Image (cartoon, rainbow, N blue to C red; front, side, top):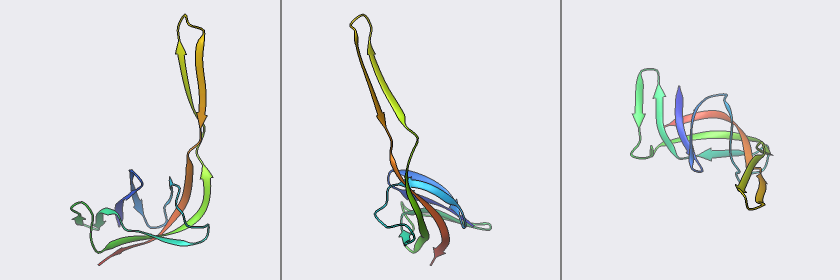
Amino acid sequence: MYAIIEVGAKQYAVKKGDTIEVEKQSAEAGKEIALGNVLLVSKEKKIEIGQPYLKDAKIVATVLEHCKSAKTISFKYRRRKAKHWKKGHRQQLTRIKIKEIEVG
């Protein structure tokens, strides 16, 4: 059984036991969260697709930790002008473990 969920502005394909990194969530480490934006659920040969979300489906996950992504460097350069900018950014993430996929 697997599902496709939407967290933040991104979509993830998950199944029970998976660990994924999503955009920062407000829950503390060790707490359970319910993710309700389920786009698709596949059980064996049966597939349910939402329009855009499934109403009676949710994903139960445990927050493992809050972390940061690898640094992304933004560098702008103006040729022949002696101007350049270098900025770095680290996105804040939450690592979650999928406990259960509930349908119906």
